[in-house]
Structure formats: structure tokens, C-alpha cells
Image (cartoon, rainbow, N blue to C red; front, side, top):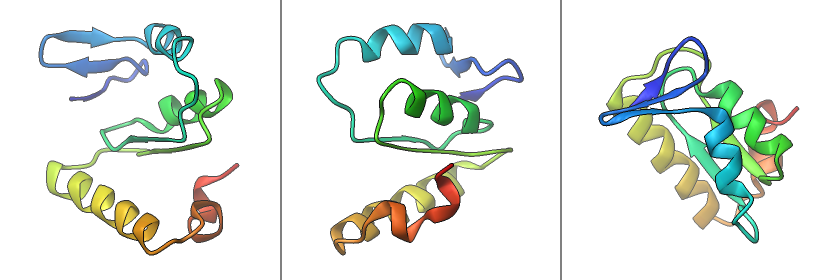
Length: 94
């Protein structure tokens, strides 16, 4: 999976647009964390925040599978340490 240059999520069985993602959020009571650790997912994460997601992480360029997994593990470790994501990752917040 990853994002194309237009911001659409490319899955093994097709694509998933930002507009389709927005419709899914209409059915959520709350989304506290979204990690889109795939290639070129930073705009997708920013859009998710605009739609009401509290915390969203994305990748500006390309990322390989190992880097993606390590970044997810790192975020989860910080959460379990009781870290405040906004304070620990200030560069991710606009």
C-alpha cells in the first residue's frame, strides 16, 4: 500500500481516495489516532486532522516496509510510556 502523487491510497485491490476516507469518518464517534505510515501519506494525515482526528501521522516521501513498521513501534512505545504525543512529537503538529 502507498499513496500516489494525487493523494489516493493505492491498495492491492484498487485505490481509496481521500473523499472516500472522509465518508468513513462520518460513521466514527471519535478517532483519536491515525497512523498512515505509507509513502506520501502526509497530506492524507493532515486532511484527517481537519476532519476531526485528534492525532495523525503521515510520511512526506517514500518509506520502506521496515521503516514503516519501526516508526509504528516507536509511536506505540511512547504511548505506552504515557507520553503526551503532542509534546513528544511537536514537529508533527501544525
